[in-house]
Length: 232
Image (spheres, rainbow, N blue to C red):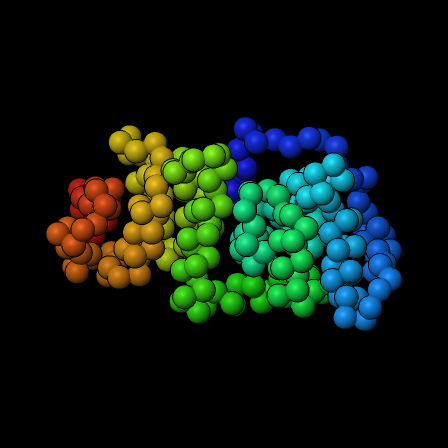
């Protein structure tokens, strides 16, 4: 997952250091049988949560990733955030956690780890991938009223989200974004058209690209850069 900005740091009072034995020792609260799964999910949340915030914070996510055996920048963690409908980058609320884990039928760390490989397969469906793609940009808006994301983060996100599907296009697009000097940040419309370009335009010949079809200027500039550098 692209790193969260440092401007929205939360209090540092996280829960006690989490170990694998802590995860295995969590017990569901007593109650009706119908609530058992939710209680176990809640108990698992408490293992990683910052007690002051009642949220899983960046430190808790790093601990979670360690127990899942994945890096915190793994795309599956971003997909997990999408499943939870997480609103704040680097943080999972109790309700978001319950939503995501119930959807995955996972109430233990072992079940969640087992569910990870299926997360990417779920995005084979075009509508779901498009929803995830839009979420990925929105998730990087870490400040109030923020409308754009800096180029460095956009490049990381493109590689993470679009790279597996459109490797050649994304490699050149990232190369272009790093050498151009006109844009320091991009908005949601520009982000959306990157996916449209990869999906609709033949590559690398660009034969069906028509600049009159209301493409953002940055896409027109990218196409011109490709032609000037004989990439098409």
